[in-house]
Image (tube, rainbow, N blue to C red; front, top):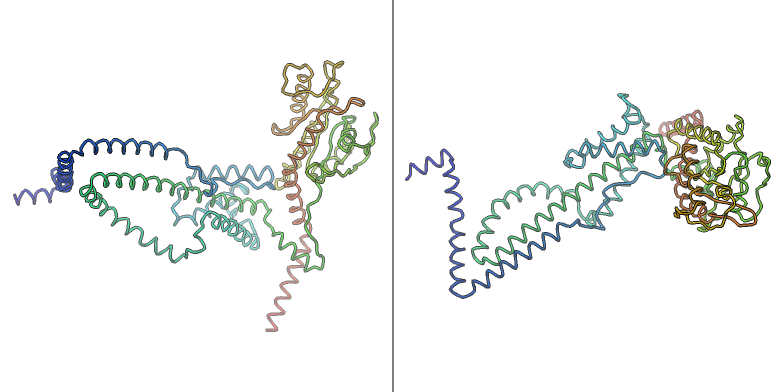
Length: 510
């Protein structure tokens, strides 16, 4: 017998493991058998069986309930949104970098490797902007680097304070202590928990089985939830690094608004950054109805209208929308095929907050509109840091579409059985495609027939309000870039040199 035990211990064969399992399970099985005998003799066996069946049904219901997606209002957001003041190129870089976070599985990065992975993500953003340049990751100045770290720290601190209520009371030293002892405690628990469970079942089978089931279920549920929360926190962390990296390498992260105000105050030229009225520029060919549309929106004759071209320059007409939003309606010369006219229009069209394109619905010639639209888009392709203003298409003279002798507004644009509605929607689609406007551009048909009132002006006003947020983001983007380029580089260098001289004098006096 002694030789057999020595052989089993030395070879660790299948018989060894079977013997060990039987020896470990034998006390529990014996107690379980005695418990069933006691229940049978006491007359409680069938009651016990019914309770087990009820417990099984209850556990199945709990598993089905927990299998549903958990809605947590206090969970950190799974993804961040691109900043509204970014240009189209910046948003394209954002989508590429977010896809890289998913492809590289950065959300599964161990916490010890997070700093290195953050630097790798920042380097990836730099390469997207600067190509294969080996020094792309250092294409910034020292103040920009410091401001980037400051901005990222402030934004991620807001996430920690919002979604970790115990962050203020938990010291880093406490977290390190818990981390050091967690692995040891888990190892001890893995070895001890089976014996505790077996002893609990042996003493009271019903209570022991129920408690074991509930603890296993809760452990699995909380473990999955914890992994989900940690993944979301990592995703938000890398996306915030990406956001700040885009601001840095696009040249937008120059200085903060507080630093701008402090600089102006130091120069004895205090200036308060105020939101200006949004500028809405009307663009279109001659006799498209730009001036008539402005008069209709203003409900008074403020823009000159005439069959001959009347607007020789740019005229600003203030207006207040229903939500107290102040805007300027900019009446412009019509596109006439002259290079000087297109050049003057382009200089203004790239500096407005919203572009309202006016076209005649009954005029098929759109070559001038398409040519100017391509020039307008070409400017923003060369100035990637500039955010392109939102665009709103308006077709006029819809009352002249077939059938021309029938005009009885209002019309439901979803009514496909109406010939007039079909003609208006066909003209809208044709104009949209002929100019080459983006698919997401807002569009609306209107009519300003004298004596019969206007049609769809209320819809146009609602579209102006809905586009105001994006127009405001365009305005802020332009102001920020103009403020950074407002001071000549030579003057900046002289100011920095003077500052260094003042510091050197102070140090020499000490």
